[in-house]
Image 1 (spheres, rainbow, N blue to C red):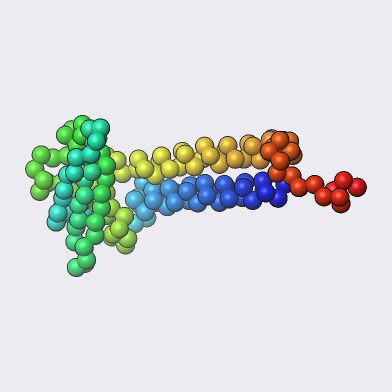
Image 2: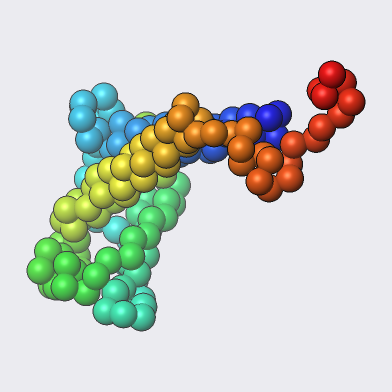
Length: 156
């Protein structure tokens, strides 16, 4: 039983951590509340690297307070052609003024996609672990897979 408790605890910690990471990412990007100052700039460098299956990786860098920050995003080519300006000098990078490593291309409209996806996936797995932990017959599993260690003290 101790083995399963360790497995469930690790699962809760991992998926709970992923949930908090996703919520933190959305908070730093002001998805729900305007807690941080978000500034706009033009990237100093931007590169479009074609990937397989009609997608492109966009790598960009920008300068803020004499430091260079980088960002990247993999996007479907259709979204790039529909949403990004044709002139590269009109592409804008938005970034958190307090934590400039938190940045994104606002014109793509994908500001909250990775955070929302992280929340959904984390909640699915946390629910899965919780339901198995609450309603699963753990003693039966331990017996089937030979993970229960029976000692003479347990048999008395």
